[in-house]
Length: 53
Image 1 (cartoon, rainbow, N blue to C red):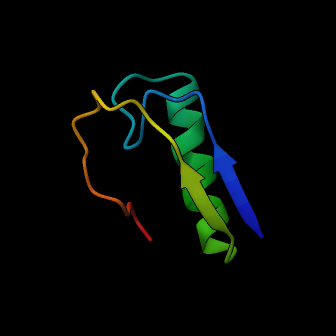
Image 2: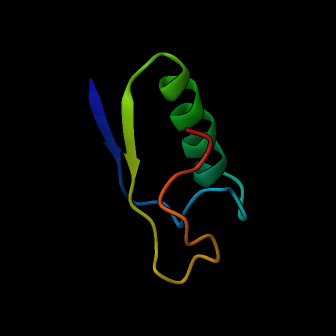
């Protein structure tokens, strides 16, 4: 299953609230063998394409 999460400032979480939820949900779904794509702001300091799998 492929899942996209949009509307976040980005992960890893630097802000709290929805970003914290998005990070926790994304890493949980990856552990369940889903493909998860998180689209975040270009201003976010984390520039890698993969985060925790």
